Image (cartoon, rainbow, N blue to C red; front, top):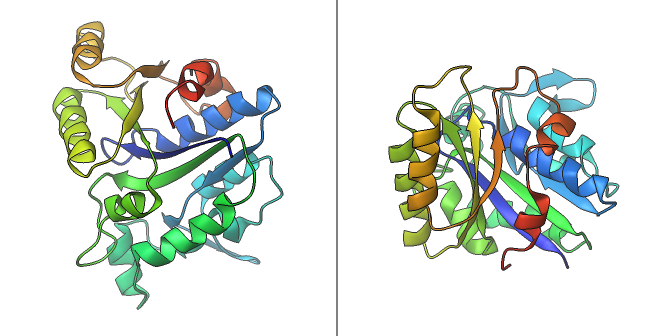
Length: 230
């Protein structure tokens, strides 16, 4: 049934969508069947077809299976804030079980690479009692961590890695993404993370302003990702 991963980040705005779409684009260049899912998207705009999120649209564009927007993004929330707060404003309640059900329906379709993108970081709440980690635990997906390379990234990355492993899940790989044009001691930070994170580095993105998934794909090692145990 192919490889399946959950994509999380050290924070919001670290390039999860760019990395996810880039990996899907790299897989499509190999004529592999791809699926990108964004179960919950906050920050949607009203269109004639309903609420739509730009990140989810990017993933849909890199999905080779004939999926609908609603299959890629089953829960669309209007406000660009934490999902559980946006849901509360719309008098909706997010549930890890329900989101897992949405994902499983699509995950049953044969694919070579399926990526489920979270929102924000690992501990972002879904409700008063659940976080995105609960969704991943239900789905039992290995995790790909996107690290925003900036001041403080070592602490953020190691704390996130510890949390993922504490939750009994596998950290399958990580991607370094330069989110700022300049970073002091970039190479030293990268080396520190390579020495301490218990998984392979599967991509190193330079600072890319307005990057396309195809541009990102050139910096991502799809072979190394597909070679990980899953």
